[in-house]
Amino acid sequence: MTISTTISVTISASLLATASSAIFGDIGRDEARRRAFEELVRPEYQQESLLERLVRIVREFFGGLLDQAPGGVPGGLLALAVIVVLIAALIGLIAWQARKATGGRRAAEGLFGTRERTADEHRQEAGRLAGESRWAEAIRERLRAIARDLEHRAIVAPQPGRTADELAEAAGAELPAFAGRLAGAARLFDDVTYGQRPGSPEDYGTMTALDEDLRAARPAALAGRAHAAPPGTAAP
Image 1 (tube, helix red, strand yellow):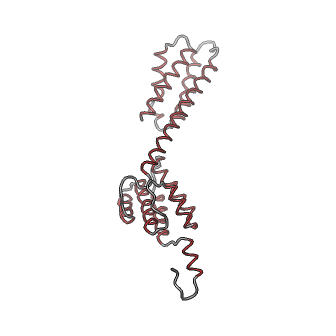
Image 2 (cartoon, one colour):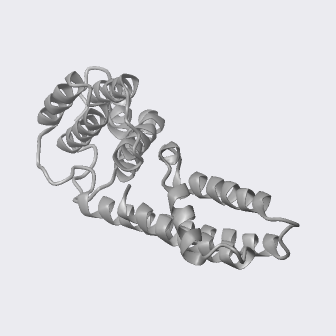
Image 3 (cartoon, rainbow, N blue to C red):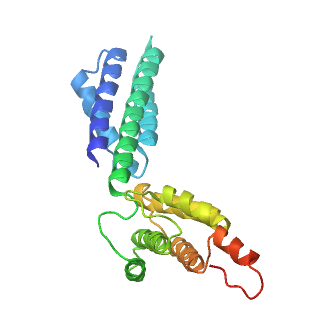
């Protein structure tokens, strides 16, 4: 369990305890907090997202207490609504902080991370990682190979801190026939780097095919000049 998740679970347990204490006079705050925390960290919920877990817990926790309460609970629905709103606000804050941290990490590392390698070195590393079925890492290295190769061929200008999306935009402008595939490659890079997507052999194959096709591609402006050159005249 991550630090942010632990904090959110603890705060959520306190909020649930407050609401249950207000609704049910015979349940002390400490006992309510203990029950709520135990419910929040049950193993069967660990594969769910934080939002899914909290929604489920709120529903089941208060549903069980309401079933146990004799004669109904005046004001119970209002208290439940208030606590759900508070938990939703907490989740929103955590999500905003996570996005902010991710954005800062992207800006600091850029596409290439902290190591300088040539395109061929990135390809070799990608092949090694793919051989070990480390697909997410292999996909990252293959897009880095694409970026280095495009820079080496002066199709895009070197840019420190460039992101995958910025690479796709710059390269797509010079190679419009590849714009859609480059944008898809950038999304895949972001998904396996920041979105916890594990990657797959198919994803790696897609990135590898793009790399190979791009190596034979020519910028639109240069291709147009070659097409317009008189017969027997080499394009500059």
